[in-house]
Picture (cartoon, rainbow, N blue to C red):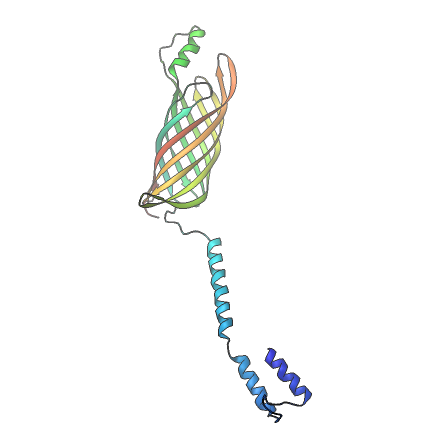
Length: 241
């Protein structure tokens, strides 16, 4: 473009000179040479343009969806496991149960879970003795039924020994119902966890959850926050992605 402007200026002045001497040159040749130079691609500019294009392609790839080795979308997850249950008012004990999860997308899912535990026998016995009640069953069962929304915003991989393990992190929120001698009613549930995928159809899960509900002991009602940590194995259906 710059060369073309120079040629136009020379033609407007009506005088054109050669680079050596004062010998006038043919205007038509000047115009033709300038046009040829303008049409020749510059190798430097082409390299710069290609470099910019490559950088933009990399940025677009980073912003796009990450390729997942393990796809959860439209799959059913069946989970069974157990762990430790810690109560505000009672002693800690075990917790066992399972869940069914339907994954609407790789990031979102709905989960229905059921868990079983029992109140610590010594504490229940002491409470009932004060009330003048003789216990025939030393275990006071506690059953939880929960409905949750799962969100998995993080997907990645890590090295365990010589193996690359793919995983995701998830957060849970929902409501539940409790059936026990010390509490009957609704509970709010919050939690988070990690899935570590094994092959194309299985995963190992670790979940931590907090349950907030009302509990009655010695004719007094308390708002408690009980927590649990569980380890589980999950099976995904269909078996292949």
